[in-house]
Amino acid sequence: MPSQKVLEQKQQMVAELAERIQGSVAGIIVDYKGITVADDTKLRKELRESNVKYTVVKNSLIKRAAEKAGLNGIDDVLNGTSAIATSDEDYVAAARILQKFADSHENFSVKTGYLDNEVISLEKIQSLAKLPTREVLLANVLGAFQAPIASFARAVQAIVDKSGEAAEAPAEAEAAETAEA
Image 1 (cartoon, rainbow, N blue to C red):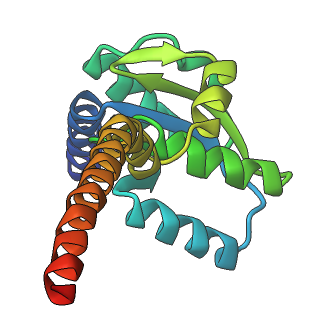
Image 2 (cartoon, one colour):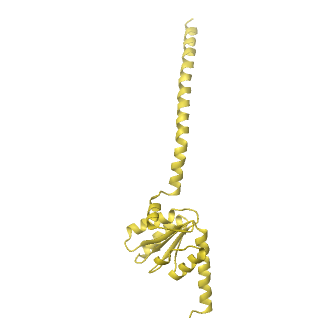
Image 3 (cartoon, rainbow, N blue to C red):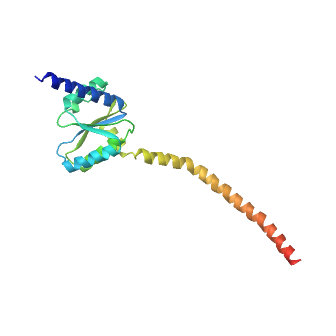
């Protein structure tokens, strides 16, 4: 039987993890067994750079935190080694980074995930992983908005250039006639 101090620490960890799950827009639970320290360090760095929180947690604590957060349907994958990655802002960052890592490391695998407190399938996680980064998506949208405006501006500039040439030609002819006289 765990001591009262240990029990309180675990309850605090569950409460913090439940709050983290509730405050996140997306999360992924992975099986991390068999990866090297160097690979783990690279993975954590990449996740940190994308503002994704990654923590190795006991399955029983994840289960209790998920229940407390109202996230149901993940119990069946909570076996073996588990880590959870959560993102407060970006829906695809954790899925993209962890799925790419899983594809290149045979012992590492994605177990499950959630979006807006709803458990999603592995197929949806893989689809999310294929999406470009938020910055690339925003750049594409901005480019799509700017394309018609840029085309319009080029057309107006061409008209101005042509009308400017037409106006300059008579003025040059007059100046030449005046110089000859």
